[in-house]
Amino acid sequence: MTDILAMPFHDAHHRPLSPLTFLPRAAAIHSDRPSIVHGTLSWTWRETHERCLKLASALRGRGIGRGDIVAILAPNIPAMVEAHFGVPMAGAILNTLNTRLKAEEIAFQLAHSKARLLLVDREYGETVAAAVAAMASPPLIVCIDDPLYDGAAPPIGSLDYETLLAEGSADAPWSLPLDERDPIALNYTSGTTGDPKGVVTHHRGAHLNALAQIVTWSMPLNPVYLWTLPMFHCNGWCFPWAIAARGGTNICLRRVDPPLVIDLIAAHGVSHMCGAPIVYTMLIEEMTKRDRAIPLQVQAMVAGAAPPSAMIAAGERLGFDFTHVYGLTEVYGPAAVCVMQPEWMARPVEERARLMARQGMAMIAQEAMAVLDPETMQPVPADGRTIGEIMFRGNAMMNGYLRNPDATAAAFAGGWFHTGDLAVLDPDGYARITDRSKDVIISGGENISSLEVEDVLHRHPAVLHAAVVAKSHERWGEVPCAFVEMREGQQVAADDLQIFCQAHLAGFKVPRSYIFGPLPKTSTGKVQKGILREAARASNRE
Image (cartoon, rainbow, N blue to C red; front, top):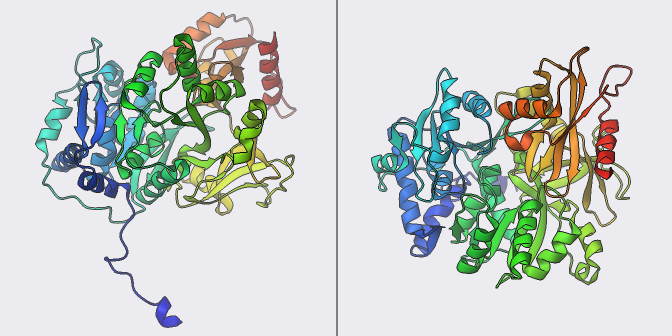
């Protein structure tokens, strides 16, 4: 028995897991099949492979390699797909930036990550110029001049993306990471502090989670995937890599424009897409307006908020087959799925929507997802009533938070990743979120730290105390609602606070409503957010 356990590892049977291996395979098997379509432009998998090799070679030629950060600020364009391969093929780490951020937010993330190079779509050049102007050591700027950009913004920087690619060679060698736990990506997420945390993910997890998405969807060969989900969100839930693994086609999209999306679905025979409920609601409204259904059924993954029954009913009638998933940036996006049981289809749509809205069970790349008592770390009973915290354990899990060992230790306390989401376990074993223990608002699929918004409000000279909670919204799911207590003798209008917040926050983070008055506090001075949440709900009913 000891002999069989003592057999050594060899390169022939033990190679680092990395989603980068999906690209040369796609180029070999699906060489002449379309890899990327962008308007009237298209590339094959052989061409995409060559362009990614050139990008990797060019980055190495500029001294960028293992451990270096390359950031990108761009919509869902071909360069975004290429960066998901070319950057880590150079040994570097890809940091996808949220296109909705303000200059000061981008400056913080670039400085915190110590980014060496920033790829930026021309549309966001003005924002980047303002961001790097405030930085002591700004990264090298490379401008992406997308042919489908129809705005008037001038190019930024002295180097453009195609020139950078021309510096590289498709014949230059590249290698897999020295260790499959080497970082592949850095994503910033809203947390319980004002500044976002940098989530460091690794090659092994990206490889496994990409395969998990394929298995979850039973994705066939050569799918046609429409990029309605931003690739800056958790690396597009690992789908840039998953689509390569299946030799599929990436239909790129600068922004979600419902008429264009409907036309693209029909023109390209789109088979798969992802998004928040608001995306599907907009598409359903457009199709209803046109009195038009989708020619072929589209597999539609939805996350960010529970899908409402009206959306499910209308979407199914018009050709969407919904799969509800749940996850966080720390677990590469979707890490749990509410698996549709065949018998649910016979139930009324309202009942089916209630069942589908749950967070479900762990995807295959996770060892386990559990609802545990955070104090005892014991499982709660599956009674649908006892509240615990959703926790994950498995291989598709971040390395930790960049330069934040305390937050990393707290997140992994007890050998599990603590999501901060409070839930119950239903008798069928499916988890169902009841509340969030951390003050994060999810609006249209975007995470908003309430403390970040509060920090901005507290900068206003007339504000003594501010507290921000989620308020339900028919279109966006949740929006920030601000409760403001003024300094003695000071007055300020809601419109003035709105303008102030707009100057310091991305638009989606700005509160939609302001309620003035003393904030309810405990005997120790802590703001009672439960009371404020109820007040926000009451204001919706008025």
